[in-house]
Amino acid sequence: MNIDAIMRSAPVIPVLVLEEKMDWMALAETFVNAGLPVLEITMRTPLALDAIREMGKVSGAIVGAGTVLNDRQLGEAVDAGSQFIVSPGLTGPLGKAVIQSGVAFLPGIANAGDIMRGLDLGLDRFKFFPAEASGGIPALKALAGPFGNIRFCPTGGIRPETARDWLALDPVLCVGGTWFVKPGDDLATIGERARAAAALANA
Image (cartoon, rainbow, N blue to C red; front, side, top):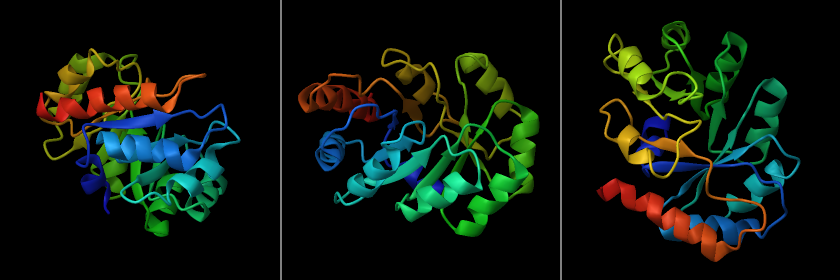
């Protein structure tokens, strides 16, 4: 799948910072069954690569690696089976490496210069990050103006109660959400949050 198809697969991409060992396949099944098949596993914790390997085995799950910062992490993520790569920012070397790998890529941008650097690499789908800290909806509207064909996945500071406002913007295909998995949560609780987020597609 290319990054556009991935972004259109669900209104919210869970951005998962996994700090406690869980049954990864059961976790992925919980999200898929709730209607959120796209899962971004951030490379911020030692559990990330195992989680990507296991969650990728679940039918219907589209599992990618987030917080990819360099070539080494890119290689590890691809070896683990990541179907897409997300980075918090965009550098020339990382952008070229991901494109060469053939894996779908969603790089982070926060300003017009970032977008233009991405366009130079042939990219037109971006993560607006950190969304709220970078000026929120007014900033994204202003950024999107000069770049008519660009589409975004705002991530960072978005909450369940504000996600709908972001999704109402034409340049936004989906949002990234970090509110799904908290320490001590059971799968039933995670599933409730996921179903609520999936329902935003019909809002």
